[in-house]
Image 1 (cartoon, helix red, strand yellow):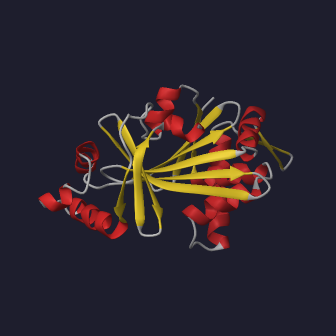
Image 2 (image 1 turned 90 degrees about the vertical axis):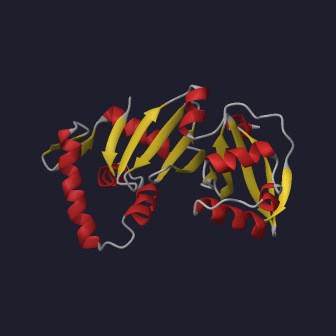
Length: 234
């Protein structure tokens, strides 16, 4: 079962099943600056959207969420772990989240997070593609670089400027090739463990030529190492 919802429809759906915290999180992310009155107007419109999709019925002024849809959403709100990837594309930032239950559910946020696609997916190769991660970690050595040097290189690539030979020599050729191919555009990954106390891990990463490299900082030193979808579960 898959669903495509506007952000307003998603928020309203979560509120209707008492997923208040999840709804508030989406509201803050997508509609941070709007008034409560404007949000209420948007949610009124979302009611019509859910009705037209058959995901909501109203009987004697009582709103009833479709049972299959409610079960789908309840599973998301009770997920113990969510992996969120912000993927830099040529035109925009695409946000893809993986809800890790016994089965996996993907959430793709499109058009500045105004449209949400939700669908189950358990094929490892497809999941790695959706998250812009290689499915196999390449057998190459990690390396370190000072953060200011790395940032200078990224700024030049983002501005379509040529690197000097000195700058190029800061990196192994395999990583440099990926960096140039992506024009310095980096992805970000946030790993949420949603137990009693929320734990969050984060890193930057870049994928190209069948390789993914993670970029993690400790002080002013960045450690760059081969990475993959499987690395998330090691």
